[in-house]
Length: 346
Image 1 (spheres, rainbow, N blue to C red):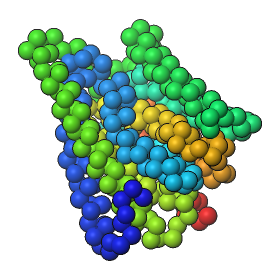
Image 2: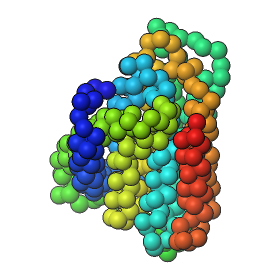
Image 3: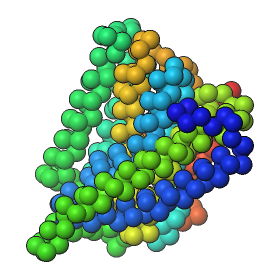
Image 4: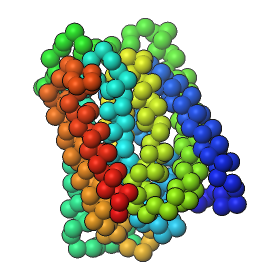
């Protein structure tokens, strides 16, 4: 680890972990409010603001953990943290659905952009599986697929942006569907935009720094449990480095910024796939994609299945389901619980 915590007692490490998690809760709540305001002032909308800016910001701690693990040759931990975070964060969205009691969150937060971001995520994960199954090719220790992933991600964002602007498809409005003001017209409010970007950047740094502390202390605590590296990465470190996503999603739900909550998770998941690029660049002993194990493939498959279920929920738009949540949230939580049992049992 970058922080040497081996000599510290477990109770102190746990206390630091808890303090950092509380700081993430505070900064993440503030960050959500600023992001919601910027979505209106800039005309980006909540879906784009959540997926691109908020999603990337809350994913910084996970990126640091993956890069650290790859740098020390811990490819198992690096990969499982990257792909495991996607499954964890999708499960967190189901938690946000439980918190939102007025209607099914996926019904109220329906938007074309969120559907498109989910499709982009599945495409990126499918590409990773294709690469790991193909012959290994590296240039200066880096697989060409890493560059293609970047191009694919950026191109996907452009497609989503154009789809949102042209509006060839749109969800039917109901009494529970969130509406938002896409463009702020007040000139006085518009002048506050640069200051809000600075506040957003400052809160992002606080969230990333605390996320890093959470990751480091989380890894140290998990190492004392005797779990496998895959289980540690896919379950423990992925969970703790994804705490910013959970906090911001729940904060967004409480503020009524429902599309922001959903896009933060889906967009953040797409950004998480890029963690593999960080690991591929840092790990110099070959292609990170060819260090995948069967368990890593299992986690990727579970993530794709969870995302597919989420997309079905966004399309079906069930108002209220069992326990006040949508069928997709119930299935996602059940699927994640099964995957936890599988990973702990290996």
